[in-house]
Amino acid sequence: MPTYAALIYTPAEAEGQGTPEEWAAVMADYNAFGEEAGAAGVIVGGEALEDTHTATTVHVKGGRGGEVVTTDGPFAETKEVLGGFYLLKCADLDEAIEWASKIPGAWHGKVEVRPVIDFSQGQ
Amino acid sequence: MTPSLEDAIKDEGGRVLATLIRLTGDIGLAEDALQDAVMVALEKWPATGVPANPAAWLTTTARNRALDRIRRERSRDRKESEAMRLLDQEDVDPPDGNDDRLRLFFTCCHPALAAEARVALALRTIGGLTTTEIARAFLVPEATMGQRISRAKKKISTARIPYRIPDDHELPDRLSAVLSTLYVVFTAGHHAAEGRLDSRLDLAAEAIRLVRLLVELMPDEPEAGGLLALMLATHARRAARIDESGDQILLADQDRSRWDSDAIAEAAAIIDRVLRRGRPGPLQVQAAIATLHGLADSDEGTDWKQIVDLYRLLEPLAPGPVTRVNRAVAEAKVFGPEHGLSLLEGHEMERWHLYWSTRAELLRQSGATEEARVALEAALACEMNDSDRRLLTDRLNAVSRA
Image (cartoon, rainbow over all chains, first blue to last red; front, side, top):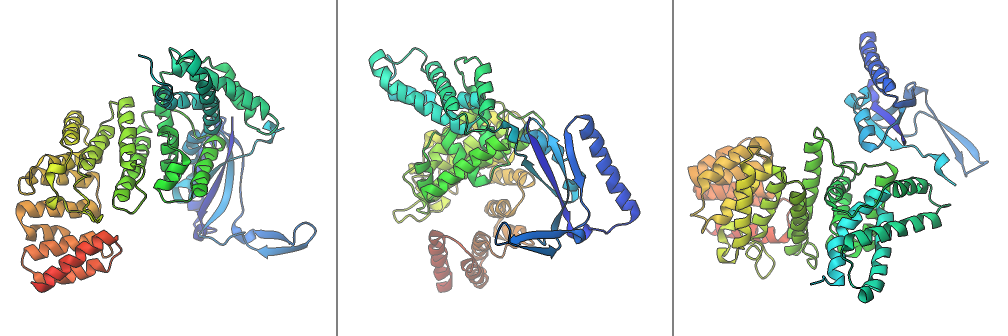
């Protein structure tokens, strides 16, 4: 059964905003999703990320062994930022889309669903 | 009488391919295996004659070839064990193919694929056209079209776009993705007739063929029937809608003796049948409107009253500028140009030439020549094709002389 990464992108302006009550409501929504998808055995991993102000982008100039260039901030300054992800084990894309639509991030942002490469199938 | 070799292969190819895609779970592998089987058939059948059940023969042969291919490419393809499992577990029953072909519609027109990829894939996989033909039809380099199709196939297999008929609760959305894909193919056929795309391939006829198949597979879906009727009623006017220089002729000015009355009659029969189900949708209503136009012997003899009723029914189902403008034209025929103009109030669409040209025509009819001229100038400031531009320039000249 394939695994899908559900990458959660939410509006950048929402980062670090909101009252504790709002934050608690969002967390409750995520907990509800975690319980439902967890009970269904769909979630095989996932993490929430600290906001993009804490991000550092690393690039090695000139390829391997080259100069390590670090930049403050996320890879791309966009209106929607990667806030976290789940790894979901689903039978097919339709099932993955159905679960992704239940992630609260999909309600006020967007969730990108991508299959994870299964290296155990190779060679 | 035994069917000829080519006919047998052509008739059965689509069915067999659909079954092979289910068995292998991989469109590319299925196509290659079918190609192999066809080669074997071309070699053997002239001597042995076409087998009693050519579809079953092709399926079995192609399935064996697919297994051969998988074994050969074992080390390279990480999905191979999967396909092997699928091929091994299924007994090859001769395909009746209907469910498989229906699955194929939903896979090729899955909303997770880009709209242009759906169009290409449907024509290629269900319609059996070659990449070269599709590329030529859409005036796209063959390499580009080939890449578009192979990316879509790769997404289907890698992201596991399922090969199944959607559940009831998903069906309305998924069916509408299929219908809109087929409608895009049909519209492209019309653009070809207007000289905007290559016309060597009759895409409109291809689209009708695919929708016919879909209606056969889903006889209980009234919108599928609606789309078929809409296409038939529209296509029936093809001989009359373009003049020798490739310009469009307006409905009112078309030579109705050149309309295909058989196609219109078929559209009317389909619409009668589907509307009786009592689940009207936008395609059924548009088809009913197109059919009413088709049944009229002249512009004056058109049942505009009923067309107005249909547009009023259509607007909540398919709101938007196109519906509003068409409704205003119809209502003006029944209730006068001022009434038509009032329906356009508050629906200004600055950059759409048909909004302005409709407004101009209604203004001219109500005697406001100067305002009509201004509206035509606004129309000509919009983007449009050359044919429309010539038509509107002529009208502007006529109004300016008046």
